[in-house]
Image 1 (cartoon, one colour):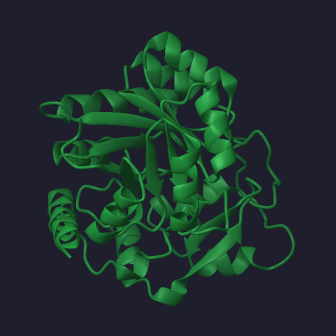
Image 2 (image 1 turned 30 degrees about the vertical axis):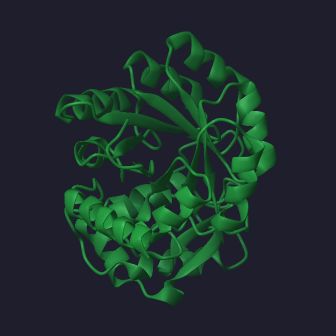
Image 3 (image 1 turned 30 degrees about the horizontal axis):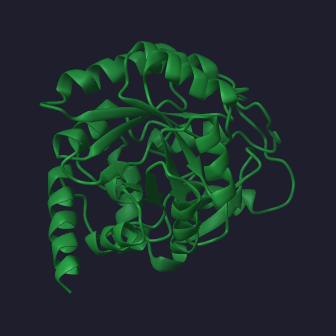
Amino acid sequence: MPKVPVMQGGMGVGISLSKLSSAVANAGGIGIISGTGITVDELRNHIRTAKSLVKDTGYIGVNVLFAMNDFAEKMKAALEEKADFIISGAGISRDMYAWGKKAGIPVISIVSSAKLARISERLGAAAVVVEGCEAGGHLGTDRPLFDILPEVVEAVSIPVIAAGGIMTGSDISKALRLGASGVQMGTRFVASEECDAPLAFKQKYVDAQKEDTLLVKTTVGLHGRAISNNFTDLISQPGKLKIAKCHDCLKNCSYRFCTLDSLLLSVAGDVENGLVFAGARVHEIKSILPVQTIIDNLTNEYRQAALS
C-alpha cells in the first residue's frame, strides 16, 4: 500500500512521464505515466526509467486512452514492461481487462457514473476512478465529483478513487469520508518542480485566475477543460481550423483541428497557441513546489481536517 492515498493523474501530452511519476511514488503516493502522444518505445523507456528511480516499494502505473488508435499497442507494451497497473479512460474495452488478467496486472477504469462503474466492475476492473466535471482535460460528465462519488461507492464493491477538483488535504478527507479509497490529483502536480512539462506551461497554471478556465469541444467529441489563451479563442469560433499536421491518432475524430498537435505545441512551450488543459481550481495554485512539499502540505491539511 502507498503511504498516502494520493494517485497522481496521468496527464498527456508529455506532462506526466518518468520524472513526475517517480517523484510522486518516492514521496509516498502513486505515480502515473501518460502514454498519450509518445511513441511505444518512449513509453517503454519512461516505464523503465521511472521504475529505476523509485526507491523501496513505490508504485508506477500507466495511463492509456481507449480513444487513441494505438491503445492496444500501448497497453500491451505497458503490460510487458510490468507497470504496477494500467488505468484507462475515454472508453471501455472488454479486451483490456482480459489482457490485464492474463498478465496478472490490475486494470483500472476512469468513469463518470455509477452505471459505467458497474459495467467496469462486471468486465473485470480492479478499481474505478470516478471523475467529476471539475477535472482538467476531457470530461465525461457535467456533474460535480461529490455528487457522483457516493452513487459510485454504493454501486460497486471494488475500490473507488475520487478525482476532479481535488486540491487540498481537506478535499481528500471529504472524499475518504464519502467512501473513496483514495484520490487522484492531476492539476496540483503540474505546478511541481519535477513535472515533465516546460516552465512556461507550469507558469500558466500559477498565473491563472478563477475566470480563466473554460470548456472547449475538442476533436475527440468531448468537452475539455482548459486555460483560456489565443488557441481557445480560435476554437471557440465556428468553422474548421487550418491543420499544419494531422497525426491521425484518434479512432473517431471531427478533424476540425488537431487536438494532439495543439497539446504538443503547448508542451513545447507555446502556451498561447496550444491547448493547456487544467482543472477548475487551478487558480488556487500560487507557486511551483517540490512534489515532496506538495505531499507534506496535503498530509498536514488532511490531519487538520480530521481534527475539525
